[in-house]
Image: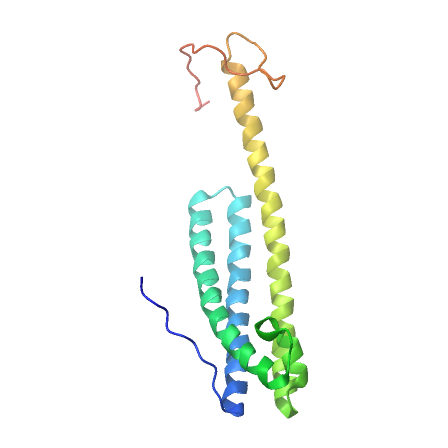
Length: 179
C-alpha cells in the first residue's frame, strides 16, 4: 500500500495566509461547480434522460474527489492556524473563526471568501435535498407503474402478503409497448 505524502502548512505567516486564501477560493470553485452540475442533474431527472444523469453523476464525483483532496490541505492549514491562535478545536476550527482573528486586509478578504463558501455550500445542500426528494418521488412513481403492469399481467388476480395484487404463477403473456 502506497503511503500518501504528508501535507504541511507553510510556516511563514504570509505564506500561510496565502495558502488559506487559495484553499478557500479552491473550495468555492469546487462547490460552485457542484452547484452547476446539480442544476444539470435536476434537468436530467425532470427530462428522464438517464445518459445525461449518468454524466452529471460522474462530474459530481470528480468535484467530490477534488474536495476530498482539498480537505487534506484544510486540515494542515487549519491545524497550523489553530496552534498559532490557540484554538481548542484544533483541526476542527472553523474557517470563519480563523478569518475573524486575522489582521488587516486579510481579515476582510478571507472573511468575505469564507462567507461566500458558506452560502455556496448551503445552496448545494439545498439543491441536493430537492434532488433527493425528486429521485424518491420518481422511484415511487416507477414502482407504481411496474405494479400496474404486474396487475394487468396477473392472470390469477390474487392478492399477495402486502394486500396488493401481485404476479402469481407464470403465464406466457405479451404486452405491446408500442401502442
